Amino acid sequence: MNEAIKAKEVRLIAEDGTQVGVVPIAEALARASDASLDLVEVAPTAAPPVCKIIDYGKYKYEQKKKAHESKTHHHTVHTKEIRLRPRTDIHDVLVKAHHAREFFLRGDKVLVTVFFKGREATHIEIGKEHIAQFVKAVEDVAKAEKDVAMEHDRLSILLVPREQVKRIEPQKPPESAQAAQPVDTE
Image: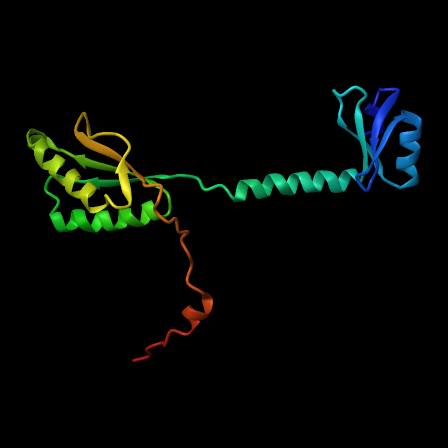
């Protein structure tokens, strides 16, 4: 750390955060060794370079901790796929729409796909009806990001959660609730 500082004078910041001012490098190194800390160059491109008296190991640890914490607060958006067929009953479409509602509340996107096999491909309107019913069932929590598109033997639409939808994180049931369940021995 100290070996990398090549400037003759540095702008010094003391261990308590106060600015000492521009001092020769020898004096800055002496102050750091008197405090049993390290002299770290925090702004090498400044004129003169800015150096700070800190515990370098603690500084690196805090930087690593901040980077880890910033990663934990990010919610990654997943794209869930719900597959339908033209012969899928309307009730089953609505059940799958209910499952998609949970995905939207977590902030995930949903790709609804209707697969066609053989002669089913001649009745694309049935697939469009299924998608329209699905979209209508979740229109209060989701909106279409892309329109309905036909690709080869499948019809699909991408739905995303609306902004005003309250996001919820999936929660595990408390362990005490699991333990309190009565066990039927008969």
